[in-house]
Length: 247
Image (tube, rainbow, N blue to C red; front, side, top):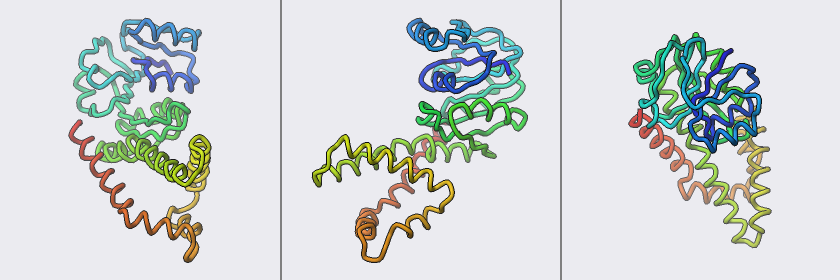
């Protein structure tokens, strides 16, 4: 596969770290960023101007507001966009390609653990999954509506989970636990529970931990009192509505 990565910011650089493709060209206009990338990836070709798209599978990793100002020529084999809010219709109107895919990675791409959502032309599906598997696990969706839902579930939820992590740490510190040690515990906790959830239904996991009149049940009652589940459901709905508006 002959790849052209347009934009090598945080997400683009994360893909470079995991990609095992010999033929890749990176377009990056920031001279400071170019020097950094050349030091990290001395064998990768980096250019400041977008070459003719013919023969390339293009990865669009620029800011959404910069997309329409891109100057491109030629006809790409495929376009994989990770720009939030830029629809397939908008991609087709503004860049010439045979096939198109939209993708939504999340912050965990920085450590190759992203839960990345994709939708678009089936003809580009396999190549898109191959490329984006470099930063984690991929989920192929059937519509842009599902992608908008996944924007909250995968794209926005890391911030909500971080809020939970901070709140748990605050609670531990309030009782006399050390802050740094609490963060280490929480990181290990999330990693372990995430692994268990690959094979265990959330409700069954909860029931296994919660014994009658136990410590977990006491804490769980307080979470229900604070309408935590209701808040998460409404947060996801709000994220979906905003994603639709941005599209």
